[in-house]
Image (cartoon, rainbow, N blue to C red):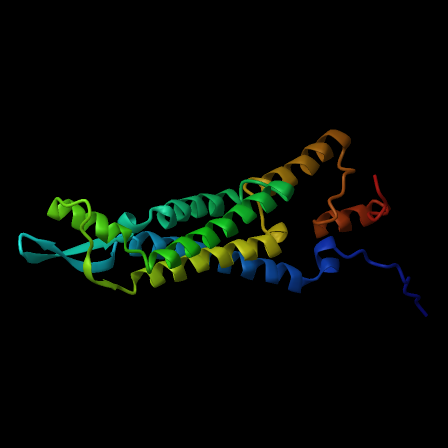
Length: 221
């Protein structure tokens, strides 16, 4: 009767960590990229639309005046650009740097949302336009109305904020630029120098080769 040796087979570190964690990291990465890019696009486009309208008294009559988002406040546009840069920079840094950039991404969205929301009730831009048209520095716009575009801009900025919050929560699980090459390159070069004795616990084939050589792949070098 044959006997089967109960030799424990080492499991790759990724398997011990669990597939759900890696899957959650990939999903959060895709969602954050979508939210950040979509939010910045919405902010940049809606900031160029008409936010406020009214009429100005000129020569006994009235002329229509309007102000776009850029005339009301340039903060949302500027912060949307910062948010886009931070969204890309998240993949270029690691550890503490990634947390800082993720925080900058979230703050960019929050600041843009606040500025756009406050701009929804602003009248200074229209009054300045009325004064320019009439030549009267004391002129004030009449029949002031606001469009929905400031709120659309606010919604876009909130998407940037959500992308930043996702980066803060799950960013440690996301890959970094060049990380795959650095991780794979070092063990292979060491193996060539040391005759193949280096084991990468994240590579199942290295674990099996170590077992074939009679080594304990779970032992620290």
